[in-house]
Length: 246
Image 1 (tube, rainbow, N blue to C red):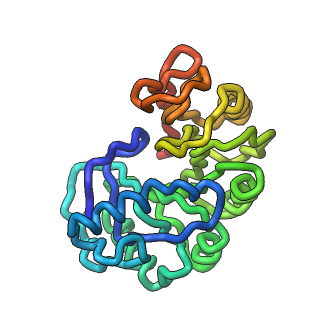
Image 2 (image 1 turned 90 degrees about the vertical axis):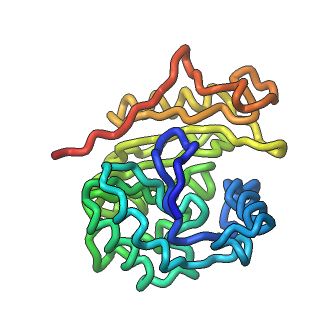
């Protein structure tokens, strides 16, 4: 399944895998789980088992039908490196990626150890960007070193939802950092100073900075509709994208 994305940092979502299980603090209010339950209730194909992990062979060829160069977020409704996703199926996902060099694929995981294991004997496709979620110090920050050990064209961090001040980071060989607050009625607040600290570190490390959203809490700390809070930080929007070497 492919669909036009509402996610600010991508163009389309491609979900050859759906479903996941919670692994860390950032998963507590998982938007994908809520959406999967809704799609299951609507009878949407592929969500018959709700948020249980499922691999969809019939979706593997979807990007092959699109000639226009497109930025794909892979598995917005899952984690490609979930333990229930066989490496043999990931091989098929990578084959599609290799067969469509006109596209760019953003692969985000909370399980970088599995990702690193997978790529131990395999090369990362040139058009695949690899990223990890960094929501806090305990679960998120240690993922950065594992990501850095993988040879990829672009390595990126999704610091969303940013749940605390994550301190000084080692951003060496990290090309792109996305920051955002949590949405939903149970959202946890994000502080402006936490974002400012990350932006400062991005500048020092020459990493591109992308501010996705404030989420349910605005820069003033007041809870309101996320659209009202918007995306303005330090007087402007920050939509920086990484530069891929030719």
